[in-house]
Amino acid sequence: MLYAEQTAAGIKSPRLSGNYTTKEAADKLLAGSDLLYQIADNGTVTVKPPAKSVPKSDTPTLTAMTVTGEAVQDPNDPFNRSYTVINSSTATKTGTPIMDTSVSVQVVPRTVMDDQKTTRVKDALENVSGVRAQPTLGYGNGFIIRGFRNNRVYRNGLLANADGFPSEYDAGNL
Image (tube, rainbow, N blue to C red; front, side, top):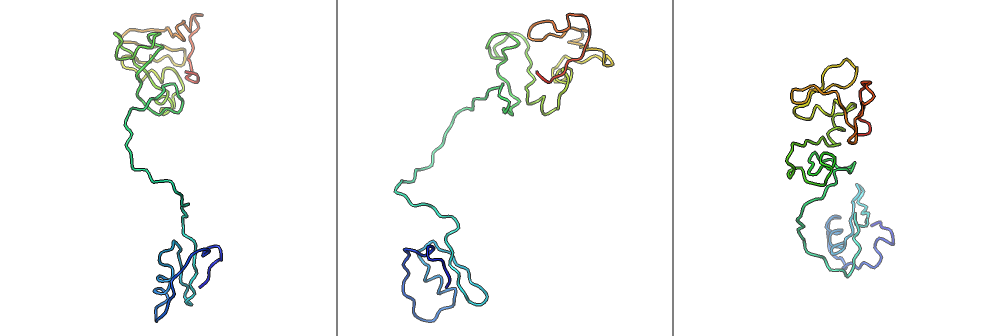
């Protein structure tokens, strides 16, 4: 038998007498310990420490418990991978939940824009029902909103193209 001194330190084994196979002898000698062994082709037994040593302590083991509740997700958190949005302060300028507003509010979450690789505002607005980008051949943003043409683009509540020059807005800082 081969083993490192620190592997078997403090472990007592019963005396072994009689005729046993190598495996039977190793099983009897190491019974009651956490030690593992391996038998080579030539009959040499190598004793190894347990694969995962668990430190023994006087701390009692706790029983299993179940935790119930709802996860609170911040829609502005860049690591939030949810498509669900319950509040939108930009549409109403208040913290009113979307279900409690009397108008139709549709929010395109950052996760959707990231997943679709959105690069322009018109790409993000394709997710909103009733809004379609009007073909402009790269000459500004034109939108058809519920059947009516609208060239106005607002940013933070202010008219973004007030200077009269049409331009396309990218979604880099939406």
